[in-house]
Image (cartoon, rainbow, N blue to C red; front, side, top):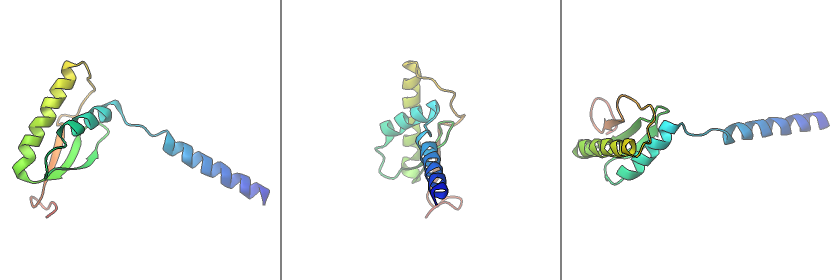
Length: 104
């Protein structure tokens, strides 16, 4: 009884410690800053931020180009301030609603 209780406690502690140590990569931290700077487009929603810092968003084509431009300008500003992380080739992937099998 005591042995199984101790084993259960150790397993729970190891699991909770593992979750607490997960942190963003430097590229993700910069991507979060880009997202916050450009999160004013009504039709664009964040799906995820990849480990390499790429923003993956869904939205309508009417705002996709403006959003992509905003992200690029924010990345340029980050570089000017000396905040550089090895970024992805493309800073943003916009999944357009209704295009190529995307969400409708």
